[in-house]
Image (spheres, rainbow, N blue to C red):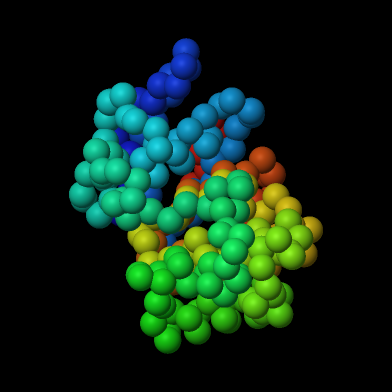
Length: 202
């Protein structure tokens, strides 16, 4: 599903090397100290950082030379990246082809909104939401986009323990049931213990 073969990344004076294989339905948790290259790896897979050498394969197709907008990747940044002039509902729909999810896709969004307790927020503007509310909605948008690879950079950082557990269980089930793969950066061992099919420590 996702193969990272002898990947070498360079940023300034720092160099990282990665070799990883992730099967369909698996979630990889990435941990490490500040500056260890966690977000750097996600940025390379997403196309925001050029690859010095090696390859990134999704379903057997090399993507390391593709621009970010052509990669089969959904990326949840630490900043939620909502369009401030659009309602949350409009922002969520932008994650789908031409901003028009199918009825089945939108039903998945609504079910997730109910589970993560954000349904009453859909008509609001992003500026009217708390950090935790924005993070749950951004998680829904990123995970339910129809892309085979999901990249998540600290997706639970603004959530309390109860919501963190609910969101983690939902994420894990969505990845497994859809046969996609996810790379998740976190600083909490509890996330790795609960969610990781593979644990990558940098």
